[in-house]
Length: 265
Image (cartoon, rainbow, N blue to C red; front, side, top):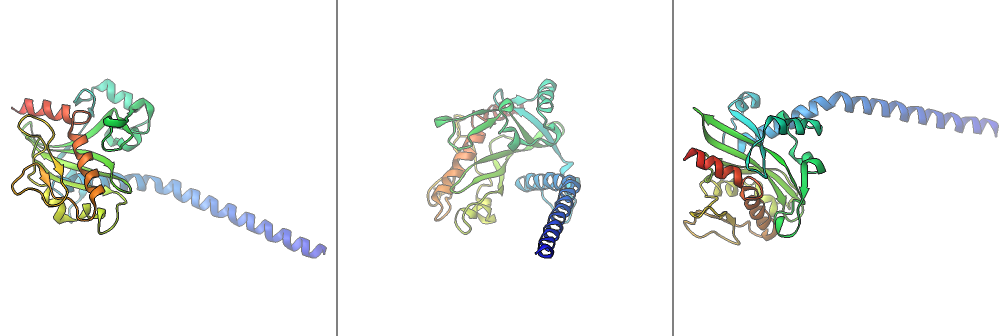
């Protein structure tokens, strides 16, 4: 009996030691790989910004291509670029303005506010105080501006970018880099053919109101504000429509776009 007990005890000891060794190896790997994961995440964001702007060149370094882009932090409520004091506020909250994590900021009470009811047609729940925008400039003029967008579809929150021309109105491109919509239905937001429909559409009507909209079924021929709905994905289509309208509207980037348009004029 004693021999059996010794055998069980030894087995348990070996198992515990093996678990400890494995845990140390896994923890060490996680720590050592974290910088690489952060770098890959940053590069993926840059790649999606370039893609939305129609500037992504396969086979060319993403870092080299991104040198053409200027990143600025925006105060959404006031519709202007952030001051040095506001950048310091972001740093004090533990975030890096040079590699701004907007998704994380939206979960931090000191850098965001809760939305409800009519304030939140895109179902984002919380709106961050600051957001990053990406611009392509030439001789001091903005040729394109790329805005981060997100909102709820049918099954998930979609995260992506919409790019506008320097007129702050005409859409250059749109793309989503993260979502969990149904493949073949709502997942068709990734379809290059559908994304190409957005090119050349106009965000605002002649009165300056947000007019862009994803409609149910095909858009009216020649209508600059309508985008074809996704077949069999009414709720995802509606979600995309609402999130785009929200982020170009007055509660998000609308104020900045208006000021930049006026400055351009």
